[in-house]
Amino acid sequence: MADVLRPTSLADIVGQDHLLAPDGAIGRMVAQKRLSSMILWGPPGVGKTSLARLLADASDLAFTSISAVFSGVADLRKAFEAAAQLRATGRGTLLFVDEIHRFNRAQQDGFLPYVEAGTVTLVGATTENPSFEINGALLSRARVFVLKRLEDEGLETLLTRAEAHYGRPAPLDAQARQTLMDFADGDGRHFLTLLEEVFQAAFDQPFDRAGLSQFLQR
Image 1 (cartoon, rainbow, N blue to C red):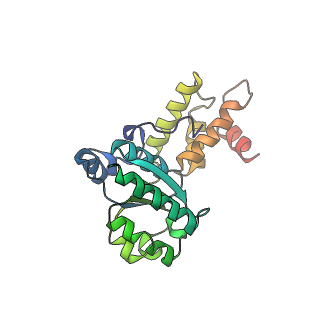
Image 2: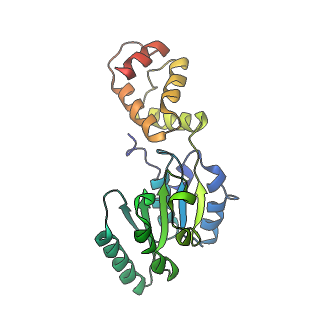
Image 3: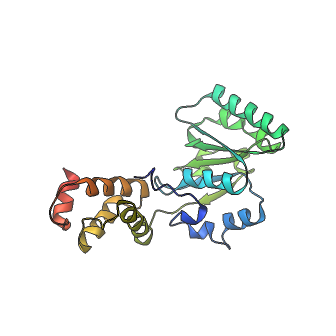
């Protein structure tokens, strides 16, 4: 369900209004069409990947994504070469690097000339404090934005979207709805995964708090 309900516009992203509202730092960048390199720091499941993809769309940039967990120097080289070729045609590239803190210092240094030259607009995502995990030289060329865990209001929005997708209310009483949010602990992706299990459960009556806790733990 997390893939089905993935945001299709910046306005669909929940819980990050402090950055995306018209007077927010990223909101102003998008309005001015002056996107700079940035590091998105926040816990899992709060929309870092979706935000990067939608920023590329809003800025008319090609989107390239790599993961520091699965990618190496060769993958970076290919991404930079492709971005350079695209830039020669007049179009820029947003390079999204998931778990950027997993690249070592030397690998992070490799980004510098391409960021400085404008070959790529770098958007790195990390769950770790950038001050300790990201090369200082790279940090000085990017802005750090903190994404927040989703509050109940944001999770409720996701639940409403899921109900619209399924065409029926979630089989949860009021207390069970709150219990599901508590289980998610601010992680929107995890929340939708749990919610999908709930919708697929074949029970005659909506879950109450105790029933939901037992079901999810089992």
